[in-house]
Image (cartoon, rainbow over all chains, first blue to last red; front, side, top):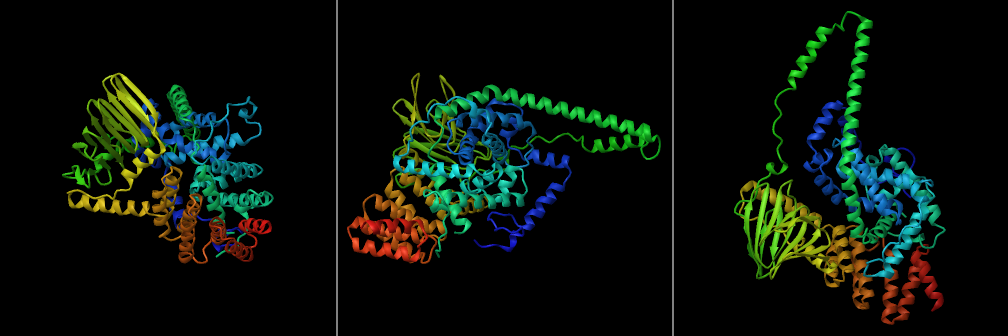
Length: 231
Length: 396
């Protein structure tokens, strides 16, 4: 693995990192007075979000319909396939309803909802999470994929990836999953997780290192992590 | 292996799992539960926030009063501060301007209309929307303003891609039904006395006598007959076809003013460039392959392969794998040869060589397969493909 001088803290540079200039601009934006910033931010909210913040059912419905596929995908990326996915998705949207009045447009609505999904996923990763204490849930329907064998292979590989990630601490696991499985850039992950960019970069790096060590022993996962002197 | 290669492989694995979604019934249950409790939760949270804010102000006022009584005189003299506060408040008491809807800042294309395009007619509203009729259909543009677009369907079928309504509205009138856009890609057809609505992306709302604001979600086909509504799943092939119909056609501005033309062309270029990025083409080709449209997938894989970067290289190998699965060893070999010509020394060398081994095996040329397998083991001994090649060499 190549080290990049830009990393500055002894680990590999991870792509998707904002430049120092853009970070300066972000810091300047954050330095504005809170009241002025809130006012400016609120003016940029979409009409749907404004109505949803007031508790308008039609706007909430539109918001849920727009965000539901993304929330489900995010949770699947972070936790793998689970029988209680429906409960988790619903929890995200109920949490969103509680948090909406505090949303001022500091980020996009997708990032805001994504942040809530990350919190719900983090709770679900805890061994004492209430849903792990529940009884068995109904089976998922059979895959609708036109290539069931391939779909089963993909599912098995993903299950193993999540098993390997399961031994990593939640913050590192979430940062890495968003980066590698969801394809987010580091700045967006930092914003979604409410962490600094350097902390996020560090979490991804160490998660990657731990995943390599765990996956090296798994023949299904070796192809994803093994060295390949190509080029 | 570089971080990027590992990331790309995991991302591709995760993308292959994207077909799995919560069943529509589960999605609807979530929506109903959220709608039952959500508005109440929002209102309660607002009340709590207001109470906190008022409490904070009262506490701050109490703290300021305590401080004033403690300090007594000097710079904290109350009347002077009160005057300043009033002046400052006056600045902010100007009557609020009426909020402008986002769509009001846009301009609608001038003289837009359905124009002949091959056997069909197409309506191009630049960055706002694009609609195309099936051959033999009749449709007219009834209204085109920055905030409202109304298409009247006389007969046949019209497919619509609402690109960016900017907060405005797009409605299709079909006999006595109004189909209003809440999403992006859908089609409306008149079949005898029935109105058929197919939605590929997003949500539309249908209003007609006896039907009030019926939502039709993505992946659904709903037939509205006299007093009867029948809903079924939109077949993957139909959905793909609908997406292709509305997305693949290049944008051409109608007779519009100079500013509109410039904006439309700029948006068109940006869209074309993003639509033609190898990553996007590759994912569209994968979707077509999964939907069984091998010819379409073949075309898009080749188009993606003509680009540059890792996705372009991966496109040739995806094409080779598809051809191999379809039993056409020669086409698979052509794809790997093309990849070798364009991306010599690319990052996917082991995968390419392993596909060659499989291609030769399928064609019955065991000697060539053995030679390629030995080559793979020699050049990339640590790769997973080399392990598979070793196993095969040992067995043969």
